[in-house]
Amino acid sequence: MDPTLPEATAVAVRDGRIISVGTLEELRPWLSSAPHRVDQRFADKIIFPGLIDPHMHPLLGAIQLSSVWITPEQWQVLGDNIPATKSPESYWLRLKEAVKQDANSDTPIFITWGWSAPEHGPMTRKLLDERLGTEKPVMVWQRSAHAAVFNSAALNWMKLKESDIGEQYAETINYREGSFTENGFFEVAVTRLASYILAPKFIDAGFDRLNQYLQGNGVTTVSDMSFGAVNIQLEVDNYQRNLVDKQVFYRTVIVPDAYKVALQNGGLEVSFNLLDERLNKPSLVPQIVNGRRVKFFSDGAMFSQMMKLHPPGYIDGHKGQWLTPREVFLQQAQKYWDAGYRIHVHANGDAGIDNALDILQAIQAKTTRPPHSFIIEHYGYADDRINRRTADLGAAVSANPYYLYLLGDSYSEVGLGYDRAGRIVPLSGLVDRGVPVALHSDFGMAPSKPLLLAWAAMTRMTVSGKEKIPPRALTVDEALKAVTIDAAYILGLDRDIGSIQSGKKADFVVLEKNPYSVKPDQLREIKIIGTVFEGRVHER
Image (cartoon, rainbow, N blue to C red):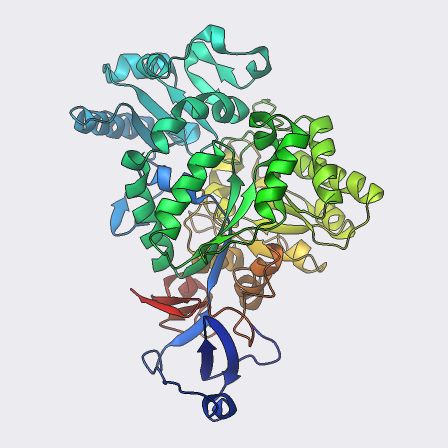
């Protein structure tokens, strides 16, 4: 991924950083100057830059991996084969079996993740009460992770009454149906669950699985794109216990959720000072990266069809949801922008992306900054006009290409229609205009397997095998850059990671085959042999 030296046969590392790259003979000036050893264990493999998943939520991933998965698509996680559950009948059958198996456990609430209405049918508090017939609290977590439905026992366990629901949550909470979506879910339900789901007894086993999963997929850098959204101190404690103390072989870039941190910590000025003090302290451990980065939310989630769309909107007429009041969004974004922060914005629908770009246009008009300091995250549905506007305003994009694979078929029938479903995550129109593009998983919206994400962007294949290519897919080089050097650039870390180059950190993934030499469909199948994280070798 260094265009000045595309290939090499040896790399010299000292104190976790690369000092030289080339042939063994070309490294002699360095090798003759100090004691050294030559490690040949990967001599017949491919050493590639450490893979980057630039939009993840390690805390959320650990919680998901501590819950029971019943999903509309098949998953393979650490040897577990989770079958696709495609019908309401099969969903309820699996849910009843899982609740029955959990009946004698000491867990205070049963949590299952993966419910999706298009495949699994409606979900309400009444249905859970009547069809499960259990007195145990049950939380059915929607596939988007932005919503959940609770049975009556769960609402009682959370000590949550209808009178506790403020008017500001009228659109996002239906207490009688046990339904909590977007801000209502995060700001009301999750705060009641936090002391349990972030406690060691529940989450630490999930972190152990997450750590194995990421390291096994060749990932050496991720980000937490919603730090502080639940409870800053509990989150810090979890990262210390599960990432730092365990010395995992990947780093987590801290990106706070500015809006939610402000809600929980005395408003904009107080929360800005709190975050500014924390983020400007250099991290003393390799597993955590601080820095001036914040996250905002424009519209709702892609998987729950709560993203905001321009006319003609959704086929069934529902409207989606805005997640941040526009005046608040603008005020907070301007504050962080003026202070030199890199701003990441969750935006999925075409209206949601335009809303984010409106904010960029406004803050840039007041304080001019170089391009690519404002990143649209997800970029779920857009057209070529928005691609052009994104380029014209100097935004960058971190996209989830797996949206098309999983949703291209179903959203052709439910929600978008065939023409718009073919424009899910339209990346070539960005790349052709010089917009930096990274690929991410937002695990578990997609597997945190960067080579799989690159494959999805290269093929634009749906789960049924259909191709939706408007007007082209990414090339192999574009897709691989999007999970290495361009992903590093999106995070503002390309000085340190993303390519095998002298001066950078010694982060590598060891592959069985050269990703440039295999057929496109084989890219996702390349075996990961191990990783190197700042010079430390981890073999699978």
